[in-house]
Image (cartoon, rainbow, N blue to C red):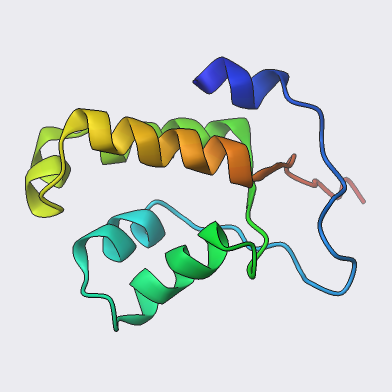
Length: 105
């Protein structure tokens, strides 16, 4: 799963008028443990539907995996490891691979 993300080419299918969004690890955790009317859940739903373009770096994806597969988080969001693997697979498929920009000026 992680290799799929690392090896994927940077896709340019995102609409030019939609800014890319980067979620820290709190975003997926909050979205997965909240009710369907919560803002966090709605953000994840809009990412899944393609309304909000998601960007992620390799390091961030590894952080998603590390946090979401933690036993305490699995209990908090009432999910199995297999279900979280599906979520991570979806994030790999949806996210646009990005790199961190460093201004050396």
